[in-house]
Length: 111
Image (tube, rainbow, N blue to C red; front, side, top):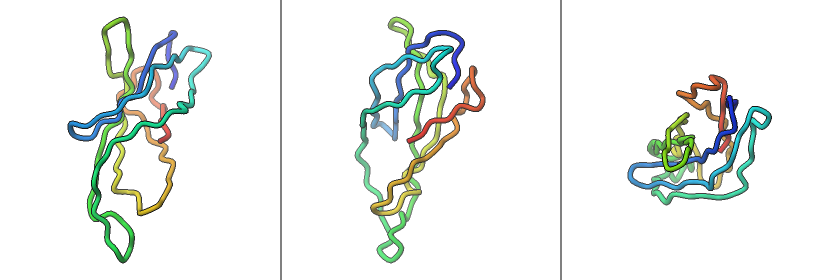
């Protein structure tokens, strides 16, 4: 994600009332890509079709990119993730467009 100045950010993953967040990281004009080597999780239940091993329902969640300035925080991007798109035992890397990002309309997040 492109930024116009050195920016302290973190990622929040939210589903209903549950949420998890990463540690903060810094993007700058020179560094627009970062790999977060940390795991964060939310527990949820998904019903699967036993014949297809595919989910029976959608499980939508939101991923927010949040800028931290002092004690203030502001959402500067948002992505949607449907956990219902994953079958039993599947590992999928999702490339998701970050919406509402004022500094980079082509920004993506991989989860």
